[in-house]
Amino acid sequence: MARLKVTQTKSYIGSKQNHRDTLRSLGLKRMNDVVVKEDRPEIRGMVQTVRHLVTVEEVD
Image (cartoon, rainbow, N blue to C red; front, top):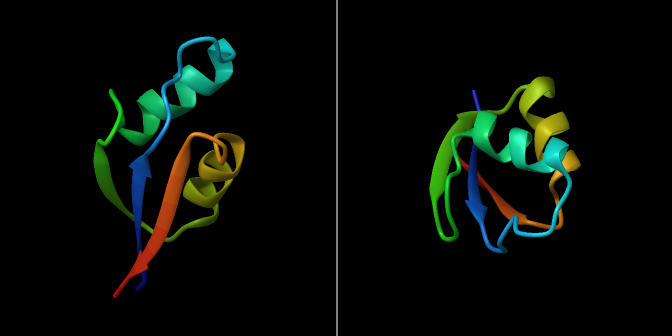
């Protein structure tokens, strides 16, 4: 199954509480943190919510 490499590229300061909570549930705590998650619809939805704060790459 494909995996997604999610990197937080921007700070969450000044963003909505919902966006902060989403970053935390993805496992991102500060800028330049990287997590690798399974490519599932739930994860895609979370990434879509904070797409302006993160970058995503597919990892095989």
